[in-house]
Image 1 (spheres, rainbow, N blue to C red):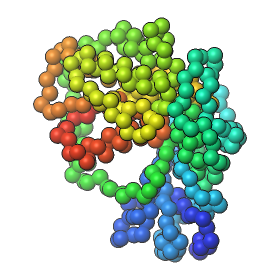
Image 2 (cartoon, rainbow, N blue to C red):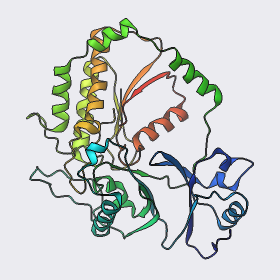
Image 3 (cartoon, rainbow, N blue to C red):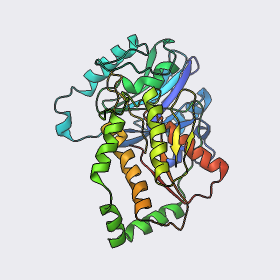
Length: 354
């Protein structure tokens, strides 16, 4: 099979993931932009040069590989996918094709909005409202798509998505493929194989207060009259309010907490749980009781129970509430990079990310 790739603005390869893509000093090793999901299948996204792609096509082209020649300059790449949910929840939704076409219509006319939605008090999205121009569909299947969009729209694209969809921002530069060592897999398999009921853990879990969980979630969703939160989207003032509130609550349990910024315009991570949320299909109100206020207050309840039961650990423990998760796990990725760079003496991390 031959492909005319010399005149393309940019080339993209979307192919089923296989570790062999990166073996034997493959040129694809320096063109990898991550793995993403499509209806239970893991796909690799790559941006190889023309010579690299010609070589790969001539030698090992996978039958289901998709090669795209971009017409426009590549901007911010965004992977969009339909999430796997119970069929009964989707009975009143339209097909992916129809929802995707409607989404593209919205995307083509979108300018990041600052006005309130649904009569709620105004709460600004902290991004430049200028739309710098258009999008390009680089890959499309019945369950997923790869888009190139302007950076401002990319940062709020999760607010435009229909129900049961998710988006992930791709890195701006290639990333290394780092396989999981067999020794690490063996350790996890050993731990899982030896899990059993522990009455001490059961007692700790039973000590979690359901009424307290309810009170916490009502504050984060804005249902509590003491809360002025309308949205916890990563750019909103509500996300910053949530960060401050979480820091105060965690510190009440005896923890030492820190707000750690990671990207300009985003609410900070609370290191002491992903506490940001997204609106649905253009609605700026994003209270996030399910995504992921419930996980965040569960983590807060764990912190309270640690204090109440005077639990001691053999290793250091950090409780982390991440921002930027709806834009592509940005907060947790920043945290992971920091852990590696600073070589934390950290053995246990409890997180809630979705």
